[in-house]
Every structure is written in structure tokens, then in C-alpha cells.
Amino acid sequence: MKQIFYILALLALSISTISCEEKEEATKYDDWKERNQSFCDSIAELAGENYVATLEQIKNVKEGELFILQDVISSTNKADAYIYCKKLVANPEGERPFWLSTVNVYYCGTLINGEKFGGNFNGYTALDKEISTPFEKYPSKDFDVTTQFTISSDEPYYLTTGWCTFLQYMHTGERWLIYVPWKSAYGAEGKDNVLGYSVLTFDVTLESIAVLRR
Image 1 (cartoon, rainbow, N blue to C red):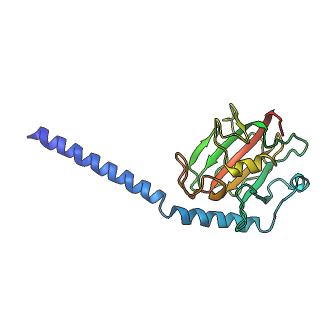
Image 2 (image 1 turned 120 degrees about the vertical axis):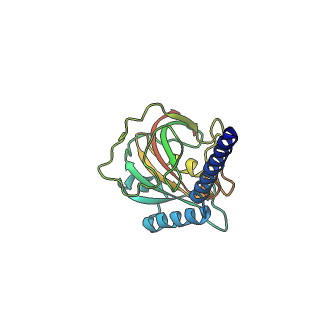
Image 3 (image 1 turned 180 degrees about the horizontal axis):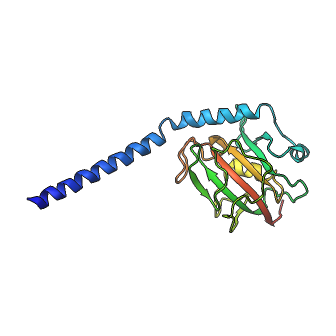
């Protein structure tokens, strides 16, 4: 009889634990679309009308200045798509990649709640709106091995239109913090551990260009 009670107690505890985990998970992502839109609106408000459209304008952007790039790939006749960027470390004399180029980067990707979903080091997150200056190229000891991307390719990694946009404006040696709205990220469907309608924040250092190809 005692054994039966013991088994029932363990079963009840397991059910309670699962219920708590489900509740926590549900709470963490409640009103996800609305919260992400609100976050994006707050970034857009900080950026104001600081649109940057040319390479010369990009070179003149100061470290710590939030600016706006148009994502021409995701833009339509009905609505333009934009991403929001901040140079943490500038290097206007570095090389710049093109659409067919292959690059080596350090990156850290987070959701609006600061949760990391990808990357090769622990960098700044969506919660780090105020970053102390002067910025350091490598503020963390976690930098180890870069990840290689071909900008125009879907393999071995799928690059969002937001990534394809900002990488072509960066110069080697630069470190940017980038906010990518869901339309320039994984859309309404999401991907893997990223829910649909997610605004993605990336801390990216363009370390080098492996293949410079236009």
C-alpha cells in the first residue's frame, strides 16, 4: 500500500512540474506578436528619421549612432521594410562584401526578451539598449571561432533579407548591433526555435572576407 501511495505522489509531482513548465513557457511568449511590434516601434522612435541610403553616408555614421537601412529585398510597392543599426566599432577603411561574397563573422542573436537563439559568442542582447562607450571590438573572452556565410546562398545557413542587407554595408573590422523586424527576419512562420513575428537583435563583427565576389 505504501508503495502505491509513493508512486501516486511521484506522479502528482511530475504532473505539477509539467504544468508549471507549460505555464512558464506560455507566459514567456504571451502576446508575442504585439510585444515584438511594441519593441520594434520603440527602436524606430529612437532612430527617428536617421535614414542612411549611400555608402558615403554609412562611412560618416558615428559610433553609437542609431540609423536606418532599407531592406530593399523585403520592401514592396505597398510598404518599405527597414532594419535598425548601430555601429559599435567603426572601420571605414576596411573591405566591404558584396552579394556573392563569403564572409567570416562573430555573431550573437537574441529575442526581445534577451533569450539567445543562435551565435558563436555571448554578445550584447536586445536588452542592451544603453551600451557604455568607448566600445571594444572584443569585449568578451568568448570570441573563439567565426562562422562563415555566403551572403547570397541558402546553404549551409539560411540568411534572412535583413542579414543580406546589413552585411553589404559593413566593413571588415566593424562591429554592429542590429535590430531586424520580423518581416526582414523569419516572418510570420518563424524558424526552428524562433517564433513567428520575432524581432531579432544581432551583435555582429565582420571579421574578414573569405571570398570577395560581386
